[in-house]
Image 1 (cartoon, rainbow, N blue to C red):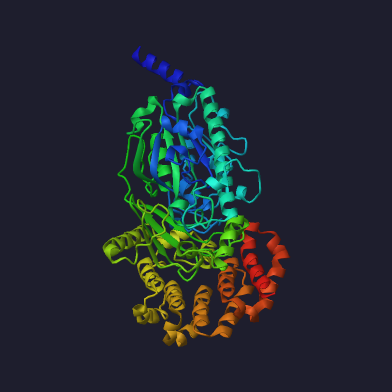
Image 2: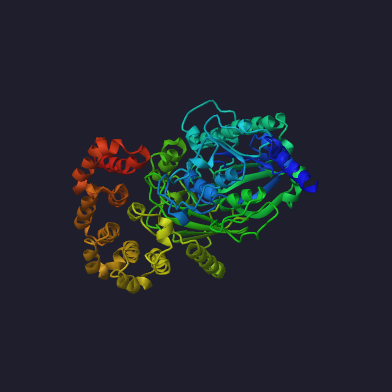
Length: 613
């Protein structure tokens, strides 16, 4: 009889709908706005109009120290979807499609395999080859409403109302530009005030969208069974926020409502504000933990909700690589009081030319004010070269404008954070030290993730060379000179970059640098050409760079063009090669490439040609 009853209960349990109705796992809803810093009433911004988010925060937990892993969408979103930093996988350059190992799954796949209904509406932008099997639905119409009765869901709604593109227009403003509190790094121009006011208008409209999604959940009778996240994919959106490694670009709003039914999954009471450090790398393991699933060992984040909490992280790590046609390489760590930034391209100015960024009237007016000599030192810094290191007390200096790196009283802290940044780079096998032209070739036969974990990537020596190179210390010149002849191409690349940064102080390295103009690795030739140009060998540098413009490697062309653009009139001797590159944009090969791949080098080439005529 006991056996019969057991079999009967088992047969009932597998009837359609029964298991779903008894499924006590929480639904999880993500509401994600784009390009939004914590400019909301609940975060203390009195200029903002955000009644829906403010009301939501009253019954939720507001995180005061939540950070994107990158200050731009694609680099941040790949960390959200994998639980790994973009730099760990070689996806730290904007809008690439370099593969990652099949063992690294987009985390909704684990939920889906465990019985969750997974939907995404609708932006992906994961900066790697898509994994479509992560979603039951991914479209502009995707919704949790299409699941089976009682089936738990993980559903994402992406709101584009606050995206940067929405300040590239002129509209009637609701927020008064005269009442904008400008950050001290922005000059007081009409265009900047109007763009700020427009951004706040867009935030108000986004807030209404959030309200509608929350009401829809309530009307469906699902609010008490659903954990809701509201956050932004990174900060924004006026220049020096999005794309830049300051709090304005990396700090995000994060508000999470855990219903009373699942109170045991959160240690914090509704309505509380907490200072725990949270990174986008933490989101994937946290969602898996909330769903009662095992977190894969390869993930780099910490679970900050659920029954299996991990220790609070010491730092939020952030990365910046190439964004569109602007080549850049920066790393940053942030604790609750200080932000440390390490610039590995200090020879470039902050405000590098970038076609999309300069569609905003605000940055154009900022640049014009600089050229007219109307700015103070804080406002002018954006248009000048970067220091190798930056250190900010984010509590007393929330705008990150007072660099403490050269202050003797902060020397020990600077050294500690430099060492801690170095440790994270080594622990995560950061691939940013590989020029993108080399990543293209690596990805042709494998993954950069695997390459970085092989003996082919001696990261400790490469990192040591890169730090010496970018510090710009003449005392390191002799070591860099030796490394110009190193057997490893990346060591040679960074040694040559160091000579470019030292400029005339690297004069004695000229014979070795001249040899590197014929190096078997083209990226090394680019670095050597830049160094030779800074040593007065203008023609030799230009001809070397011009010869690389016929390469099939689009990012090698971009690397060469970036140096040529910075050479100004001295690049005139290779204008024919530059114009030829623009002309080939219409050939069949280029037509078959997505515009986000094909356009980068053409944009820079066009700027070079326009500047010469």
